Image 1: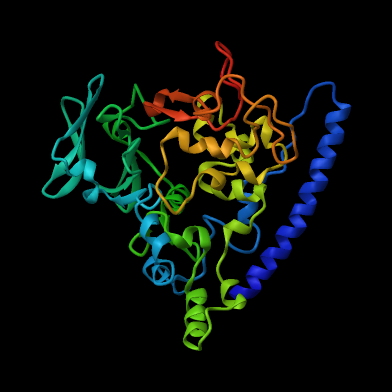
Image 2: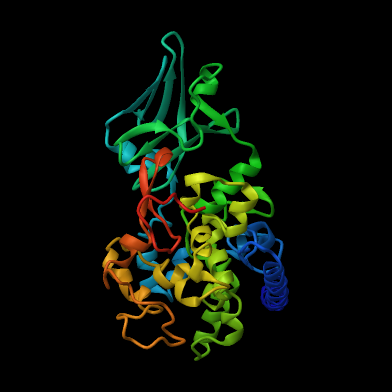
Length: 403
């Protein structure tokens, strides 16, 4: 059944790419007839991708029996499994009491007018308390989202309903402050000051990007999920694949094509689909547009910003997310590491002949640390952090941040 689904998905994607190509052609014709330049985008929204058959991040499987588990994956993929488990993605969700930030023993505090917030450990459990000077509310935090390298947000349960803490830990502050996009300077009461209630669909969405197998057969199962993004978030449930490969190896082979086809390989995606694939959780071009995200908050949507770059065009394998970032290893912060990626397209000197492989002009300023100028860091106030802007461009002093 899984094999048939993969084949069906392959046919579906081939058909969709044809539709995309037609869409691009129509958009180009419209652009030619329009007195203003019209950008051409062939990407899809994540909801569109999820409506297709086959695997896609945040897709819902039918049964937990479909999953093999990371330990099973590691039996054949030892090196990748060893490094993947220390990546930020693998550590993006944890039980609140296991969060190293909260285990430091230091309580974190924040005051908004008469409301005083505190997060810390109490009796081995993470706890959020909020006081207005007369009354106080307290709840045990259940889940911590984010590694804390930038920030860490928290959920708690009350009467079997999830609530999002109104405050988040930020590494740059070494303290808590309003959760991004959740600031409330004049709450109506203590409960509203403390947290925001979440409906079940939002809960599913959050956990689908921060954990593995949180939603199966349409049901949210917090006691069965695997915290963090593991192998099967991107490659799909792997039980059938693992069984087929083990059987083949035991029979003297090294696996076969049928067994390999039972797991999804994102590396075979087209450039457009590849960036949309990562955009399932990091926001595709259309996700941002449909959500009407505005202003500086767009900088956090790296796939959107990348796809908005002039050099993106209709997609180029040399500037996809995975062309620069290997999801199996921790993020590399040394900027010089990315120079070789830039030089895949750009010439190194003005005298170098322009070719199909190197169509990009040589930089007139430098040939190293390219991203410091062409992908500058942009401070996002509500995150108390400067993010690397993935809209590749020539940045001119004093110009506004391009949308």
